[in-house]
Length: 169
Image (cartoon, rainbow, N blue to C red; front, side):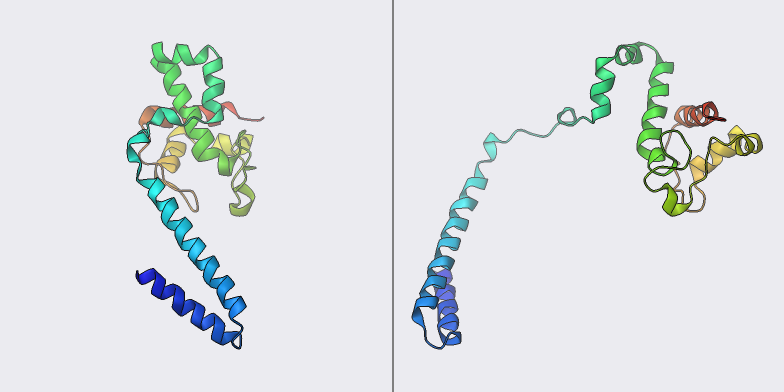
């Protein structure tokens, strides 16, 4: 019954604020009562937990996952570990590197211009940087680039190979 007291207090404030016009106060009171009743009825519906199914990772896919399923590459990935590591490196590129470096590595990703991301496809840059240097920068980060020290060595090698494959494009 505490909510009824709150409703009457609200009604009293509205009536007094409106110079005694009870009609406005009653409309507000009725609106508040309807809101409280609907809220209480709505909250009762949330207690039916037995109908909810537990979340599973298979409930969510990205558009790229659906594309991969439509091709034969997905079935080959389960049998050949090299293909699987290549797909992991490509997945890491799309989700971790491309937002800054862009899909082609030119530094034209959505965040690239804001942080002056370098063009990884330039011949001059690729000629001066070794694979070990690239792996080190990916693993430990540099400047505004975050570090990715939890990536497996095989995925790091795949990322370096992907960067090398874009040379001069």
